[in-house]
Length: 115
Length: 116
Image 1 (tube, rainbow over the protein chains, first blue to last red):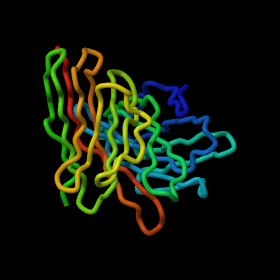
Image 2 (cartoon, one colour):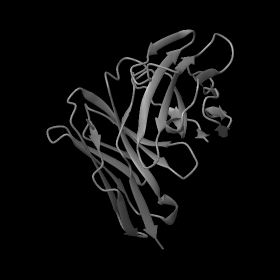
Image 3 (spheres, chains in turn green, brown):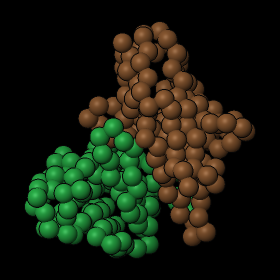
Protein backbone atom coordinates (compact mmCIF):
# COMPACT_ATOMS: atom_id res chain seq x y z
CA UNK A 1 0.00 0.00 0.00
CA UNK A 2 1.97 2.95 -1.33
CA UNK A 3 0.70 6.11 0.32
CA UNK A 4 3.14 8.34 -1.57
CA UNK A 5 3.76 7.73 -5.24
CA UNK A 6 6.13 9.21 -7.76
CA UNK A 7 4.88 7.80 -11.03
CA UNK A 8 7.77 8.93 -13.20
CA UNK A 9 10.89 6.90 -12.45
CA UNK A 10 13.00 9.21 -14.60
CA UNK A 11 12.97 12.62 -16.24
CA UNK A 12 15.37 14.17 -18.74
CA UNK A 13 15.56 17.95 -19.16
CA UNK A 14 17.78 20.33 -21.08
CA UNK A 15 19.96 22.70 -19.09
CA UNK A 16 18.25 26.03 -18.54
CA UNK A 17 14.74 24.63 -18.93
CA UNK A 18 12.21 23.88 -16.19
CA UNK A 19 12.15 20.51 -14.42
CA UNK A 20 8.80 19.45 -12.98
CA UNK A 21 8.72 16.49 -10.63
CA UNK A 22 5.37 15.15 -9.49
CA UNK A 23 4.13 13.32 -6.44
CA UNK A 24 0.72 11.95 -5.45
CA UNK A 25 -0.48 10.82 -2.06
CA UNK A 26 -3.50 8.97 -0.74
CA UNK A 27 -3.45 9.65 3.02
CA UNK A 28 -5.59 12.72 3.71
CA UNK A 29 -3.99 13.00 7.16
CA UNK A 30 -0.66 14.06 5.65
CA UNK A 31 -0.11 17.73 6.40
CA UNK A 32 3.60 18.34 5.84
CA UNK A 33 5.45 17.56 2.65
CA UNK A 34 9.14 17.60 1.83
CA UNK A 35 11.41 17.11 -1.14
CA UNK A 36 14.84 15.55 -0.81
CA UNK A 37 17.61 15.21 -3.35
CA UNK A 38 19.90 12.21 -3.30
CA UNK A 39 23.20 11.50 -5.01
CA UNK A 40 24.51 7.92 -5.26
CA UNK A 41 26.19 6.64 -2.08
CA UNK A 42 25.05 9.70 -0.10
CA UNK A 43 22.18 10.44 2.23
CA UNK A 44 19.11 12.43 1.15
CA UNK A 45 19.58 16.20 1.30
CA UNK A 46 16.64 18.34 2.34
CA UNK A 47 15.55 20.77 -0.39
CA UNK A 48 12.24 22.38 0.44
CA UNK A 49 9.05 21.72 2.37
CA UNK A 50 5.46 22.88 2.48
CA UNK A 51 2.78 22.79 5.13
CA UNK A 52 -0.78 21.91 4.18
CA UNK A 53 -1.94 25.41 5.11
CA UNK A 54 -0.06 26.72 2.07
CA UNK A 55 -0.29 25.96 -1.62
CA UNK A 56 3.11 27.26 -2.68
CA UNK A 57 6.55 27.66 -1.20
CA UNK A 58 9.54 29.09 -3.01
CA UNK A 59 13.26 28.98 -2.26
CA UNK A 60 15.57 30.24 -4.97
CA UNK A 61 15.30 28.02 -8.03
CA UNK A 62 13.02 25.57 -6.22
CA UNK A 63 9.25 25.94 -5.86
CA UNK A 64 6.88 23.40 -4.40
CA UNK A 65 3.16 23.48 -5.22
CA UNK A 66 0.53 21.66 -3.19
CA UNK A 67 -2.96 20.82 -4.46
CA UNK A 68 -4.75 19.32 -1.47
CA UNK A 69 -8.00 18.55 -3.28
CA UNK A 70 -6.08 16.49 -5.84
CA UNK A 71 -3.64 15.14 -3.24
CA UNK A 72 -0.84 16.17 -5.52
CA UNK A 73 2.37 18.11 -5.15
CA UNK A 74 5.05 19.09 -7.55
CA UNK A 75 8.59 20.43 -7.42
CA UNK A 76 9.64 22.97 -10.03
CA UNK A 77 13.31 23.65 -10.66
CA UNK A 78 14.06 26.61 -12.88
CA UNK A 79 16.46 27.04 -14.49
CA UNK A 80 17.69 23.44 -14.35
CA UNK A 81 21.43 22.91 -14.04
CA UNK A 82 23.56 19.80 -14.69
CA UNK A 83 24.38 19.67 -10.97
CA UNK A 84 20.68 19.10 -10.31
CA UNK A 85 21.01 15.61 -11.80
CA UNK A 86 20.10 13.27 -8.92
CA UNK A 87 17.23 11.21 -7.56
CA UNK A 88 14.47 13.30 -6.01
CA UNK A 89 12.26 11.91 -3.27
CA UNK A 90 8.94 13.26 -2.18
CA UNK A 91 8.07 12.60 1.50
CA UNK A 92 5.06 13.27 3.69
CA UNK A 93 4.19 13.22 7.36
CA UNK A 94 1.06 13.72 9.43
CA UNK A 95 0.57 15.79 12.53
CA UNK A 96 3.59 18.02 12.02
CA UNK A 97 2.52 20.31 14.81
CA UNK A 98 3.71 17.45 16.99
CA UNK A 99 7.35 16.60 16.97
CA UNK A 100 8.80 13.39 15.71
CA UNK A 101 6.61 12.12 12.94
CA UNK A 102 7.77 9.42 10.57
CA UNK A 103 8.24 10.30 6.94
CA UNK A 104 6.58 8.25 4.20
CA UNK A 105 8.65 8.37 1.02
CA UNK A 106 7.81 8.00 -2.63
CA UNK A 107 9.93 5.73 -4.82
CA UNK A 108 11.95 8.59 -6.29
CA UNK A 109 12.40 10.20 -9.70
CA UNK A 110 15.80 10.25 -11.37
CA UNK A 111 16.37 13.66 -12.94
CA UNK A 112 18.97 14.04 -15.66
CA UNK A 113 19.82 17.56 -16.77
CA UNK A 114 21.66 17.59 -20.08
CA UNK A 115 24.19 20.35 -20.82
CA UNK B 1 27.91 22.71 12.57
CA UNK B 2 28.47 19.06 11.79
CA UNK B 3 25.64 17.17 10.16
CA UNK B 4 24.30 13.77 11.08
CA UNK B 5 27.17 11.31 11.42
CA UNK B 6 26.90 7.62 10.68
CA UNK B 7 29.47 4.88 10.95
CA UNK B 8 30.61 2.68 9.54
CA UNK B 9 29.84 3.80 5.98
CA UNK B 10 30.19 0.27 4.70
CA UNK B 11 29.72 -2.95 6.66
CA UNK B 12 30.13 -6.50 5.42
CA UNK B 13 28.81 -9.37 7.48
CA UNK B 14 28.36 -13.09 6.94
CA UNK B 15 24.97 -14.68 7.49
CA UNK B 16 24.32 -15.24 11.18
CA UNK B 17 26.62 -12.46 12.40
CA UNK B 18 25.55 -9.29 14.16
CA UNK B 19 25.56 -5.82 12.62
CA UNK B 20 25.80 -2.62 14.69
CA UNK B 21 25.14 0.70 13.00
CA UNK B 22 25.83 3.99 14.78
CA UNK B 23 24.30 7.42 14.38
CA UNK B 24 25.19 10.74 16.03
CA UNK B 25 22.48 13.38 15.51
CA UNK B 26 23.09 16.99 14.63
CA UNK B 27 23.92 19.24 17.56
CA UNK B 28 20.76 20.36 19.31
CA UNK B 29 18.61 17.62 17.79
CA UNK B 30 16.79 15.34 20.19
CA UNK B 31 14.87 13.17 17.71
CA UNK B 32 16.53 10.29 15.87
CA UNK B 33 15.00 8.17 13.12
CA UNK B 34 16.20 5.12 11.25
CA UNK B 35 15.17 4.32 7.68
CA UNK B 36 16.08 1.48 5.36
CA UNK B 37 16.43 1.66 1.58
CA UNK B 38 16.37 -1.55 -0.38
CA UNK B 39 17.81 -1.50 -3.92
CA UNK B 40 15.68 0.45 -6.40
CA UNK B 41 13.18 1.45 -3.69
CA UNK B 42 12.40 4.51 -1.59
CA UNK B 43 13.29 4.88 2.06
CA UNK B 44 11.12 3.00 4.57
CA UNK B 45 10.70 4.17 8.16
CA UNK B 46 11.90 1.79 10.84
CA UNK B 47 12.02 3.49 14.24
CA UNK B 48 11.89 6.89 15.98
CA UNK B 49 13.72 7.48 19.24
CA UNK B 50 14.40 10.20 21.75
CA UNK B 51 17.02 9.97 24.47
CA UNK B 52 16.50 6.67 26.33
CA UNK B 53 13.08 6.16 24.76
CA UNK B 54 11.67 4.36 21.75
CA UNK B 55 8.74 6.48 20.59
CA UNK B 56 7.60 4.65 17.45
CA UNK B 57 8.94 1.31 16.23
CA UNK B 58 6.07 0.48 13.92
CA UNK B 59 8.41 -0.02 10.94
CA UNK B 60 10.87 -2.27 12.71
CA UNK B 61 10.84 -6.01 11.97
CA UNK B 62 9.63 -7.85 15.04
CA UNK B 63 12.62 -10.15 15.27
CA UNK B 64 16.38 -9.63 15.17
CA UNK B 65 16.20 -5.82 14.97
CA UNK B 66 16.57 -3.46 17.91
CA UNK B 67 17.43 0.19 18.40
CA UNK B 68 18.53 2.38 21.26
CA UNK B 69 19.45 6.00 21.90
CA UNK B 70 21.22 6.10 25.27
CA UNK B 71 21.63 9.14 27.47
CA UNK B 72 25.25 9.37 26.39
CA UNK B 73 26.61 8.38 23.02
CA UNK B 74 25.20 7.64 19.60
CA UNK B 75 22.03 5.86 18.62
CA UNK B 76 22.60 2.21 17.72
CA UNK B 77 20.65 0.05 15.29
CA UNK B 78 21.43 -3.58 15.96
CA UNK B 79 20.65 -6.47 13.65
CA UNK B 80 21.21 -9.93 15.06
CA UNK B 81 21.77 -13.07 12.97
CA UNK B 82 21.81 -11.15 9.70
CA UNK B 83 20.36 -12.70 6.53
CA UNK B 84 20.97 -11.77 2.90
CA UNK B 85 17.66 -9.87 2.80
CA UNK B 86 19.06 -7.41 5.37
CA UNK B 87 21.47 -6.08 2.73
CA UNK B 88 20.43 -2.47 2.23
CA UNK B 89 21.38 1.12 2.92
CA UNK B 90 20.42 2.22 6.42
CA UNK B 91 19.94 5.93 6.94
CA UNK B 92 19.70 7.84 10.16
CA UNK B 93 17.98 11.22 10.40
CA UNK B 94 17.67 13.73 13.20
CA UNK B 95 15.42 16.68 13.87
CA UNK B 96 14.25 19.22 16.40
CA UNK B 97 10.98 21.06 16.62
CA UNK B 98 11.35 24.68 15.57
CA UNK B 99 9.44 27.65 16.97
CA UNK B 100 7.00 27.54 14.04
CA UNK B 101 6.17 23.94 14.90
CA UNK B 102 7.84 22.40 11.86
CA UNK B 103 10.15 19.47 12.29
CA UNK B 104 12.45 18.80 9.33
CA UNK B 105 14.53 15.65 9.29
CA UNK B 106 18.15 15.84 8.17
CA UNK B 107 19.84 12.67 7.00
CA UNK B 108 23.25 11.16 7.49
CA UNK B 109 25.30 9.58 4.69
CA UNK B 110 24.04 6.09 5.45
CA UNK B 111 25.58 2.71 6.22
CA UNK B 112 25.63 0.22 3.39
CA UNK B 113 25.25 -3.25 4.82
CA UNK B 114 26.20 -6.22 2.69
CA UNK B 115 25.44 -9.71 3.95
CA UNK B 116 27.44 -12.47 2.29
